[in-house]
Amino acid sequence: MIRSARMMLTCHWSARRIQRYLDADPAAPLGTDEIRRLEAHLAVCEKCRAAELEFKQISAALSRWTVDTMPDEDSVEHIRRFMDRLTGESR
Image 1 (tube, rainbow, N blue to C red):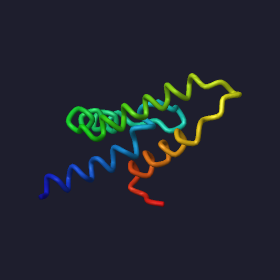
Image 2: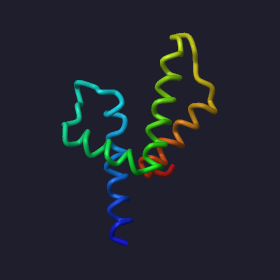
Image 3: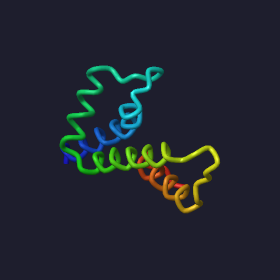
Image 4: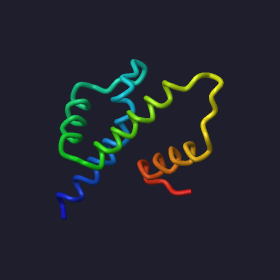
């Protein structure tokens, strides 16, 4: 029970940092300890690795768009649902 609660908390903590980790944004850098902790969690958590992969896929898709390209509504809704699941929010 305690182990699953700890994993849930670590997943929640990780979910809030995965995007910053992938972006490596100098305006919001992760500390060395945070990076180590996140990478250790990603190594053992399938759910968070899946989120990391989805973020990478979204980033790759966005980088291929031109300024004139508008996303289709299904893609936008998919991203909204993904972000709601990731952050535990519901509409």
